[in-house]
Length: 192
Picture 1 (cartoon, rainbow, N blue to C red):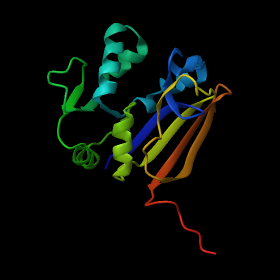
Picture 2 (picture 1 turned 90 degrees about the vertical axis):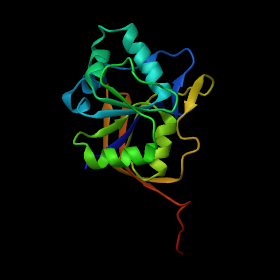
Picture 3 (picture 1 turned 135 degrees about the horizontal axis):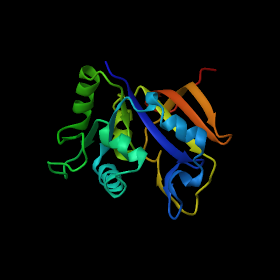
Picture 4 (picture 1 turned 135 degrees about the vertical axis):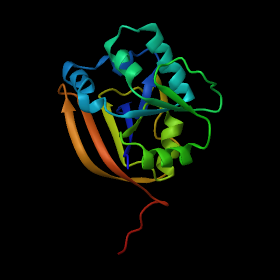
């Protein structure tokens, strides 16, 4: 059975991106980039929604010689969408138009490679709420983008208890935090 990881890069105040800021908020360093390029970080199937697919496939088409996009081009990808139509332009991408939750349950049962999300805030929220997420990982970048931040990651999420299973610091400033999530029905009660 394949595991499913939700994987985000975020600002300290919980944004996925910010208007006018470069990718990785301009703070990616050699240690972090080497980790991203390691074999262990490439051996998965990427799951995404239509918005992320359009954005990332567009970047890949504009930079075909970029090593990072060359890796993404060869990686298996699954996009969930009711608006996209086949054939898709991005190599090694499969389109799923049916129910996302059913499709991911099936993937977890029948796929050998681990599954990992790529962006796709709405998709991640749905998968977490359905109890399908085995790991929740964020890499926190040391910036606060309150004035320019876009796409608050945790808005509309259910209540979730997180158990820390791994942490790491990259380049003396980026924090990787990986958790095992448990979706809660509401705030925990205290017995006193």
